[in-house]
Length: 142
Image (tube, rainbow, N blue to C red; front, side):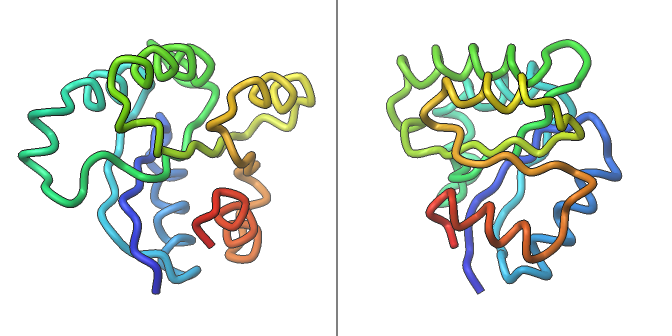
């Protein structure tokens, strides 16, 4: 078992559940934070001092799974906000993101390559324990 603090940012509760189950089946345990859109996630992450006290040894998340298509703030808007957050809160430089999305669009895959902290791209319909392990390995969390 490998223990990581993880954050899932996805507006679909079922998709979050499936990812949690896959993580468990793949042997990954630890605390999981959830947000149903990018704005909720950025607000949560931005409140670093409060959350570091509230969740000692569990905050900030090491790995963040991010959906692209969400209301209020989509995945790409989150990535831009996260760039700014990393610039003002250096502890987030250690956080690794992987896309967990229904998008198979090559343009989306190419677009996320512009962010050096995005290490994986997992299409939801292709989620298997093996694919998850491979994605985690690309995040250096395998």
